[in-house]
Length: 197
Image (cartoon, rainbow, N blue to C red; front, side, top):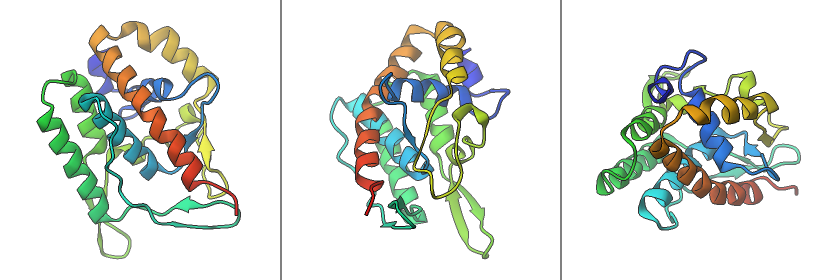
């Protein structure tokens, strides 16, 4: 099962994210932000927190605007994405050996910015992570009126009954540690960046 994180038939890395999000949320609060840039930031910060044993103080300064009734985080620009990625790479290098190789490889595949041309003739940097949410697995609502989404009951059941039992102790330890660390940043982001006027 571990190598299937990289060879997921349902789509790139969805099983990995299902497990990570399961650990990052609790029975009382299953909310996750709809903004994939926030989730990118939270995965990086949760991983750094876990491998260093210290709260991650690095923050990409988000810009936000207010459509209708909610603050919504604006896309991180190319510079900020690359800066966050380089910071993540440096922390992995400094803390070499702290993560199971499969977990490390999958995180790098998900988070590495991929250069592409945009519709206006410019260049963008989008990691694979951004493409992973177009799936009924995550009950993901599209549109600015939604600020959070949930893991579906079917996904939670699949994680508990099928995915978790097939993972090694080290992979479970790493994903559980990253997810628990992520939860701190999830709550902070949801309370800070999504609020009414």
